Length: 99
Image 1 (tube, helix red, strand yellow):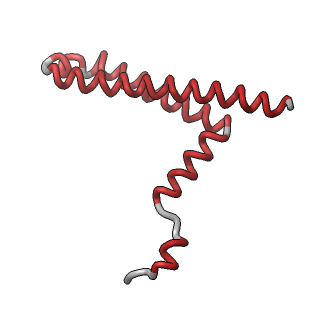
Image 2: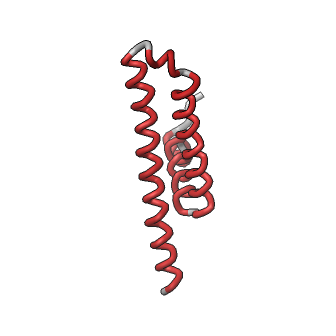
């Protein structure tokens, strides 16, 4: 069963829903902080797992080691970028509230 073009254009795609979710997260301070906390927990858990659980497995192969810690570095860099965005958003929100 195919939808005609007119009906299809009105249906919300996954990409549109993802953009709406991202916009909601980025514009709400409490939601941003929740996601920052989750991302921090994920990053710390990833590091701890690599240090204490998979340490011997990672030491067996340089590719595993580089892959694991590369992902950890990406998570940490993403977390820092998100935290900087949050700080800038808070400054912008406070500035807008004071005017």
